[in-house]
Amino acid sequence: MALTVLVIARSRNLFGVIVLGGLYSFLMSTALVAMDAVDVAMTEAAVGAGISTVLLLGALYLCKSEETKPVRKPWGPLAASLAVGGVLVYGTLRLPEFSDPSAPIHVHVAPRYLNEMKTEVDVPNAVTAVLASYRGYDTLGETTVVFTAGAGVIALLRRRRKDRQP
Amino acid sequence: MRYDLILRVVAKLMIPFILLFALYVQFHGDFGPGGGFQAGVILAAAVVFYALIFGLADARKLVPEPLVESMLALGVLIYGGVGVAGLLLGGNYLDYFVLDPNPVLGQHRGIFWVEVGVAVTVSGVMLKIFYMFADRGRMDDE
Image (cartoon, chains in turn purple, blue):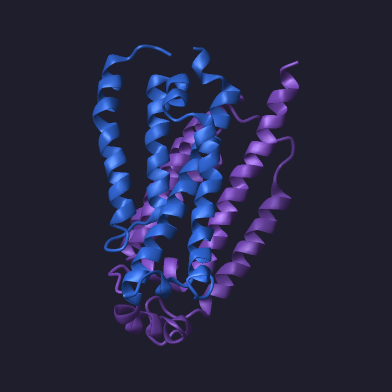
């Protein structure tokens, strides 16, 4: 994955960058499978590697396929992103170990969900039960966000098409 | 659009299975990985695949634009409707226990319709965005 990122950063051919982005998504989803997050891995493979690659290729069709040389050397932005990344890594140092049973997220509501689910919801996939039932409001919000995104894209792209026609 | 025999035959072979897999992911989401979001994306991917091979105009004929646009809103309405149905039957908003005399079956029913709503909205949005991008590039002119 690190190699893919390096090649993406160095490459000037946008077609290659998009294909490598899809490759990165597939590697990410295998990493998620290895961490037992199958639902997230499936979404990553379908959205990250599938749909977004197609959409980026569609966008590439509208512009040139070679990235132009940057006007200035990007030292300032590079330093800023390294600093932010460093702070984020520093933040993860104090997080509990992966799959540590005494971590705060595992002792708050998760045991109640897992223990009561069999009698209350009786759906074998815990992710679905939490997503659609216990956290129904959140998922309603997410669906509305997706809807709003689609409506926004329609509003942006349709007006330009009308402007061009007369 | 060039006439590419191998691509067309392979696409015709694969698209039914992609659609079937989307339905499997949708309705098997209670038991295995998957659910409305993933199924919606796979469904949209099948139509995008069709559009890439057979041209955008044919895909528009198969899945017309007004249908896609109404799917956008319909999904959210289904989701919200489940909540309102819970209200009408005397529960709280998005309370699935009242949807069936047996509370556990009510939960199943609620989750089922909610997932349907998510799938409809997600596939509608994905398809609409793809149509918009492809339209600006006028891929079907070739």
